[in-house]
Image (cartoon, rainbow, N blue to C red; front, side):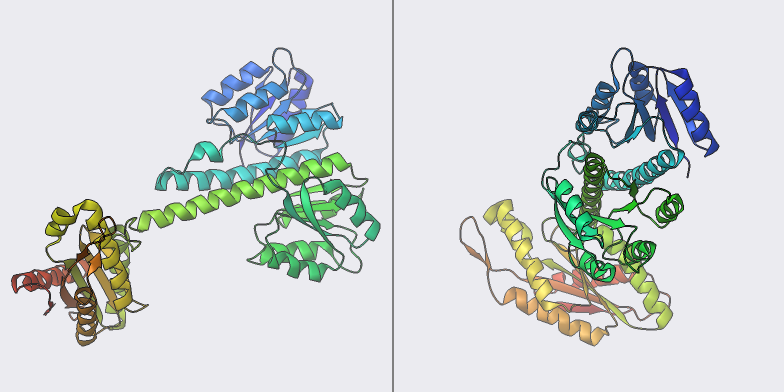
Length: 457
């Protein structure tokens, strides 16, 4: 793992110390002695993480963080505040300014590398998702990249795995203001609980009775239902080896006892916010992919999807020596429908036509809007005889009942013509198959419309 890290501190000795530790881990390090220089560097140079001192001349670290998080170009850069201030109010102020994490001077090596590597992994994931989503289509990144707030919009769902009842009670009270807590002492019951409900954070105690906490962490990371839930391990002083192993297994963060309730809250809030951020990006990516392959008006797959998927299906049929049929259908005299009922009426007809296609074809068939009023249905493992039956069922479904125009309430009589081609020539490609189906459709039009025509190889 490598990344470019910006260290911001007005004391040269602090800068040199952090720089040496980071260089030893093969990170690229940039440095700045004041807030304005740091802002200038971030504006001109890609940065993966910022270690930001609070007490500096000119503008302090709080203001630097606020400016970074309100700038869409830099809002996605993780910021770790490194400070000698250890009062709860200072940590709360840092979170409100948008800080992703904080370290207290003197900085412990394990804490430093844990926070740095965790945030860099998070940023790498976020950058990839943001890039894919942005490439597919605009998804309102300004909202996604809005600066973090110190408080959650709504309480998180937290699962606490702790065997000791008194510790359960203390931690639950500390987290009550930011989360709905479920506390469980049995690790195996906790695993089933985590898989059953949409938890946003699992806190695992290292002091589980007769059970290895690392095994529970490994199981949580292995299950599909719990793979993306953040985990926070609470360990005892001197359990650094356990913490290191936990981080290697995918645990996101850790705390050492005795617990500072304010730090417990702050780190829990950070993990819940990251979970929600990642979930939003994944949802936007999924929506973008769906948008890219779906026709917005009809809900059928679009031509882009057809072009890719048909080639795959044809290749598979050729390899296996299995039949495959394609039908192309369009709405007869569609221009006159638009002329009579307007384009909104034409859209009503296209939507209803798509519904009737879905009703006529089989579940394994692929229905796509090819363009305008033309549609394609791909039927794997289907002979020309069966394809003709499906096409006739579709033709009858379209002609059998009028189409309603929503704006006027009028009923429009609609018919369709269908052309069929079946993959019967060894090695034939998708383009050739579509051309033959299109010729059959053209023949159906010339023969008077409202009919099905098959095209031989």
